[in-house]
Image (tube, rainbow, N blue to C red; front, side, top):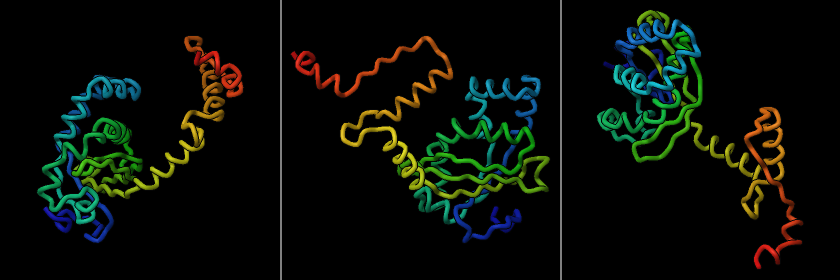
Length: 214
């Protein structure tokens, strides 16, 4: 089935687009919502305790079509290669983002946007901004779902690197004062008496160095 067949509004030059079809997930969803009495916190806890349910739902997805940009992103030479590596590509996604995706759908949120993580076929981790959309005429049965991915791997790396530099000493690579200050504030807010922290200044170590290594 091609993009033209199911009336996608995006052409093949659109950046990194994926479409997929959900089958029997609505039936499974209704059963789970009844078990959890439509309570979001209970449903979320259920999904966390039953990863097999997420895997079953993922297995009920039929991938209709992908474009060339999707193949390039995941290092696939053709569609057959891509579809043959779905477990590898979506491994992190199933366990991290898929449950939130379902929870949002059950609340009637048919357009979603979130940061997700995937694996390319060559084993590299890919960070993307995922735009998830169900067309209006498919809202009732979740028939055709369009997913557009925008890669943000480099941006994610730079962000994490800046966060690292902000909380580590450049020379020693150890946590700096900023980290410990934020950590103390966090612990004070939680008021958890089960933790103990010892703080020693650099000058103290210099003063007692000969005793420490004696």
